[in-house]
Image 1 (cartoon, rainbow, N blue to C red):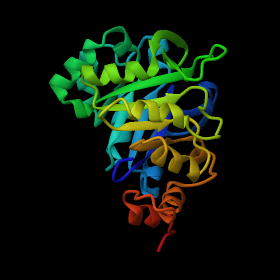
Image 2: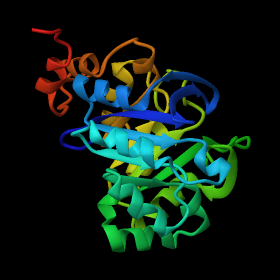
Image 3: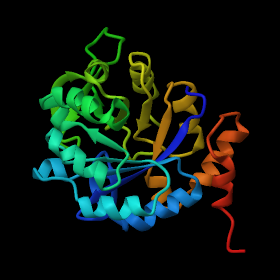
Length: 271
């Protein structure tokens, strides 16, 4: 666990609107990305992740206008992913206001994209997004393995997800955004075993994603999984909790979260 684990809010965007589903399916509209980004920052979010979840499937670039409008209202870091196919796609996103660029499908196809991106823009700007699903274990096998997926979690690759995360870091990625497809949206907790396996293999921050249902799940990702950050989405979109409540609860349990005073400020009403 890092010294100050981060609480990161994810905005999955399709056709300019924030959506949320279960295991990457059954998407429903939950709001405007600009309004939600501003709200979650006010509640105490340490970072915002904006993923254009249909861009890779549709073979188009990220919606720059939404990125620009979202970045204009934020003072916390913004990570943007979806639709990055070549090195020339990264610059416009950074100029639109993104602080970091997340890449999945294109990096699997051409890992040199990570190396060139790190060389031009710095490894701190390059995030490898790994969508992972468990592989059925043959009888008698005790170790767990995960397969990496591309195209918004819809296409399996031949890559072992843990090994691929480590390889991507060697190519130049400065952070790993690790999503459990199995746990995504089900709110039973992150895949701590997967998170720990990756965190032990790489020397860069790992963002646990997929499965947050309550504050204890974030604590498990930090303490047991070794994650540097935990990504939250659905439970916030549905109004089941707030970033401020999550951070306050984590602090009560001894987790040294960032910016607790700002998170608490976000819970107060108008003066």
